[in-house]
Length: 252
Image 1 (cartoon, rainbow, N blue to C red):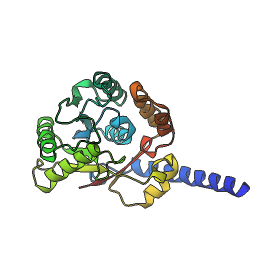
Image 2 (image 1 turned 30 degrees about the vertical axis):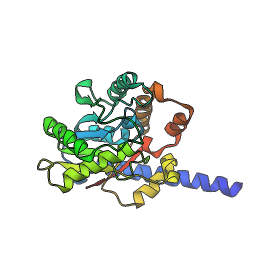
Image 3 (image 1 turned 90 degrees about the vertical axis):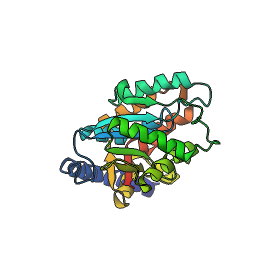
Image 4 (image 1 turned 45 degrees about the horizontal axis):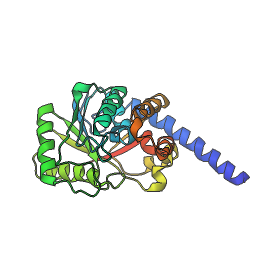
């Protein structure tokens, strides 16, 4: 038992040290050095359901705001799987406000073409054409969405990746528009919270956002806006998921 306790303390100290070093390095690193557009650029975070922004992308959204980028959000469904669509749209707006995004920069698509349903495969071409319209309309410099595994494996998440991948590989994105995808990790790492940081720092990624303690509280407050979704296991997610503090991303 003493050995286990020692190892836990050692891991905690090492993680704290890594975080201090990372925070210092981030303060000296410009967005351009990280491969990101500079201050004043427009970023579009693309999600499938209300609460994705708080559960998965809060570090990215707060990190981009920290870099003085104008962040907008595009949600491809109202989250109406349990007939709670109208409630969840309001919750999304409240959550985004906590994350610093005004209602004028939050777009929610509520169409039968994109149902909140893991059993339904969204049409890639239709998702891509809809996304491209919003990219042009917002003068987007950076698109952020899920990777090929969708973090949780949800088919709606993966559909967004397929669409943005098709736009990127087909050369249909506006000139200078970059795409970042949120890295999926295994279950052990997913629920290691801050203890995943040393592993993350040693793993390949193009961009890494790590929240401060104050920003973590902000992310948790945003998640608390989704009252209709706060079942017991979601509280555990908020406590232990690394996505509440860490986002590692890769460019397409």
